[in-house]
Image (cartoon, rainbow over all chains, first blue to last red; front, side):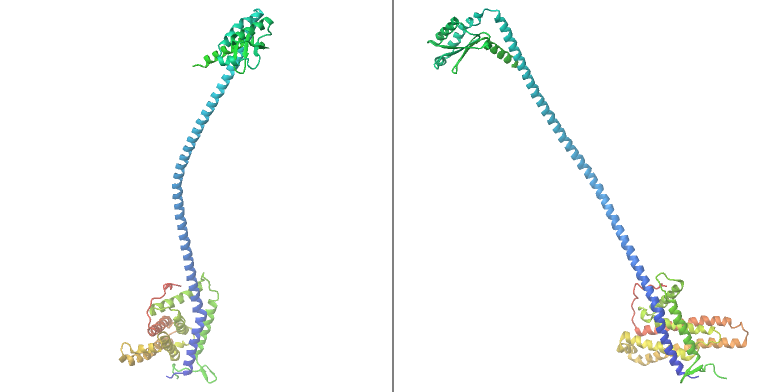
Length: 247
Length: 231
């Protein structure tokens, strides 16, 4: 038995070449594809894990959000109830204030209407009284509408304070208002009565005002003396009004 | 009568005598290289049946190397895998009528043993450095230096002789039985020879792994992402 050195060398080279061939065409590509699959599997696992973690986080966030909404819903309901109660109280107070204001305004209006009606009734009564008085005096003699009032006028002048009586007639004739035009005798009687009441001679200036109905009036800037039906009726009306206004 | 251990050149290539083991090895190289190139031309992440078989083979080699050496199997995959594939193919080539397995001749086994020996030295120096590798011969004591050197040579020799003896004896037994008995009698022995060839390929690859692992000398856990059961 002997060694064939050529065969030994060739076989050594052949095996080394085969090592290179199989490394190039078999082991390296297969190991690479296995590594690639492992990397892909690891990537998919990591992706799945990340997706699962993300889903878990989203689920936890949703649960937290649901809990937060449940808690805030109770608080919101309480706040809404409190707000509704406050608004109800506000509206109630505003309504009550509005009702009070309307009632007050209505009372004011009623009082005004009542006063207006009373004024109208007073005017109507005054006119009615004047008409009645005028019709009644129309049945009397004409001189009764003047002569009967001269003494009263003198008494009214005499009842004035001294200073007022002194001032009357200082600026000129004493203005004398009569219910009708005076006859000369009546004018003279009036002048005599005024002079007597003032305690000195005085001239008079006669004016006619049928509204007096009957009687005489002296109206100066310093004093006034009224003795007429109009003045009497005005006093009566004032007295009636005071009597109605009294509780 | 010529000895069956003596090879006759098939043809001469200049001064070089081309013998039958060389021709069969070339045929194995052609088939293995062409087949590998054809089988790996369309690898994909979703493996076909053929790709799954290839991945099973590579995974088994990686698992064996990783378990034996406790290192990343990538640098040693091509050498160990080629030794296993070639020895298996060479042993099983005896099933083809008229073909003698290259491993039944001492030159092929010697070439394999020499490659393993050279790989042991090269990987050892690459991993430990020249002085680090030489220092391993003095372990556990300098007294062991001669014995360790003898061990390096004898284990390489035993690697060669073991494969040669098993394959050559199987081939001789089949030839003798075929000469003495009828046509169908050697069939069980041929089936046994298939099993013996596979076992010898596995043993040769594992011993090569052990020798290289001892020269490299590192013991660390394989990387966690390496799946031992990867197809």
